Image 1 (cartoon, one colour):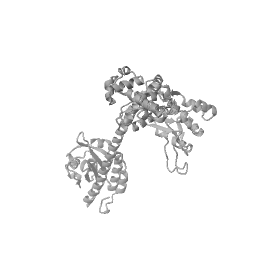
Image 2: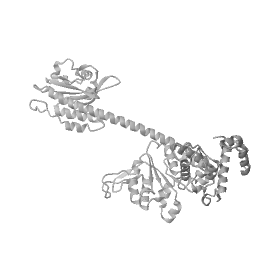
Image 3: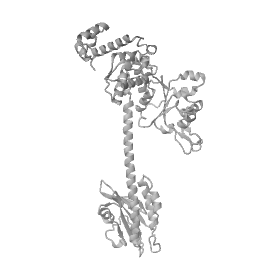
Image 4: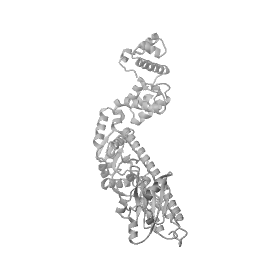
Length: 516
């Protein structure tokens, strides 16, 4: 290429840049050597990279060399021409290699040419990453009198600079990928710790049965159907099953079947091909494909349309489907966990839900009891939410008063745990001190018609109830010590004794109550 007959010395740098447009630089180097060898008419060529462990050079990519030659071609820093180029960071050109004693010929190309009575020229330029030599790029070409060695060397230096830049980009991409992988690993570990079975709150007999069912189902790949009223924590149980299973490192994908319109649910679950509908310009992967190897959580599965139920049934049976508008069969390995608050048995009798799909989903059933049936867990849950939202909203709220506890326990909680969480968060926001009292709770808990916890009363009665609440709270904090309780209320012991007798309180019953 670089001869007097072709003085332009145009190396196809565009083609070289296209070959280097990849994050996998090692896979691109053989193509780089192929382009340069064809452009220069080279007999052989090589990219040598520095090994940090040994400090020597090894061949990363080559052209025109046998496996034996590649294995022999190893150089220490400063050894031979290649080692000196690495050490000095400057290009070296040998017009006639037969006259250069530093040309070690470990690849054997010079011996072969001597048998053919031909002379060779050798070019070797350094590779830099961040101004630091990390390797060399070399070509062995037939000797041609009058060759423009300076021009050819500059072309090779440009090519080496492009390779070095690509190596730098590849290193940055690899570092970013490693960082993202580490962040992803940490996030998955945090999710696993957050949703592991031991973090679920509740010690009631009903919840103990739930924990047992979760532990039984987690190691398997069986389809699980979680049933229970809205707000009982079905999604938390689904998370606990996934993050306690061998599929924990894989994705956990959630689909709210009731929140998506019927026209969109199928494309969300199974994806679509370009042209499947008006705005489908490119392929989209569905939730099943995104959950490959992991778990797909179908919340409110009872809301699926009959058409979508048919396709879901096929996936559960065959573990395959076609994207919307496509004909190619897509196979998936996904565990399905479904949840519903509907009476699926009644829905199958009415024809709203397919009976065969019901039996496919209801392989292993977990029933979550409503909060009113696990009243012993209410105080534990409330304390958890007090701690959570006090920290979130940066308020020094530490506990619930006796009257507030009584109201929480007496309420029937139609919204279950979700309603309890919302009530506590609201109370945290309106609370002025460190204790949540009954008047901080929502009106629904304070209205007799709704909760049955407080009777209708006049202003005097309401004031008396509040006064009784304050006295109980002070005695509880003072462990029944009347003098200390009086100081907490900033009153006299005589007045406190009068109030205690008025409301029929028993200070002695607070002596065993641990101070919070």
